[in-house]
Image (cartoon, rainbow, N blue to C red):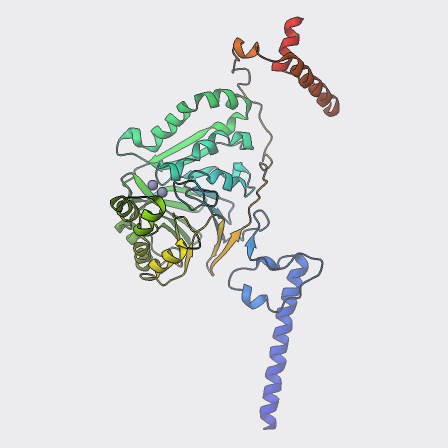
Length: 437
Ligand SMILES: [Zn+2]
Ligand SMILES: [Zn+2]
């Protein structure tokens, strides 16, 4: 009995020492402000117990404040910048996912309507967002690319933009022609506003690849490989697999579950695949006819039950469905449908959902975006526009400047010059007075 008591005391002492050690670890991390960013897997073990300071930052946030957390060297972070439909809504932009890696690389997959403002709300300098992969050229996956490209330099992007996208069934339907026509379509934007910005940000590198290529590497830099898979969504649509540091991110863009995804999108850590609300609901919510609802919801896209099936077949560590209006009532229905065919880890994506991915696991949180964002500061010294004088106003516009308002504006510019020690000359508003001289 005595012997037993001694043994129990010994165990108790060891446990006490361990608890103190764990406590000290948590406490010391608190001193350096690191304890709200513990590697996944250790979080539970090391955070108990924690002494919370009355004056220091709250040690554990179950949200992600963009720009406040350093990525570990072996960590991936994915942020949903668009999870919705072609039908515009405040709550959900159309398709867009941002992938950030611990080596500093960042990739954008799809840029549907509304996604540009979500990206800006993360406060990331646009120079760091220079790689965009488009799964297909529908507006809900590519609609914000022109805005991102043309107004990037206005928002302090001083480096070229790089684009990857599929070829077309006809050459004129492919990404290369699309990008060239986009430049033509926005010729006036480029001539006018483009003449007033750093010219480097308007350079565009277009990488078109074969839409039928299976598991082909289309990007291989700095230890990151990105492969393309054919998708079944009309034609000339693709899905992507990103591999880095033993982590795999799979993104379907739009597709029916297909044999290429089944064969190659296996072993993904994070697998993001489209999924629709049931046809019955599509009739009710979108006013579709029965044939429209069935065609759009099960043939052009992946029905929720079919999403569950392809996830069961490919077994990702964590599955994410997107591409439906995710509300309190639709999400219950979609989850019920998916659970008929899949019982693994699952998130129903909503804009700003954030995933931290490491070899130890996946941690889902919501990001808290900045609703009042300004562009992040430029990352290098701005180059003067090389064509500022290339844009010539017509005499018609020049003749229309209102002189008394122009005088007020010119006084404002004088005041500005005095305050800043500069000598900026008024352009248009100087003209009526220049004419008089
Ligand atoms: Zn589509
Ligand atoms: Zn779509």
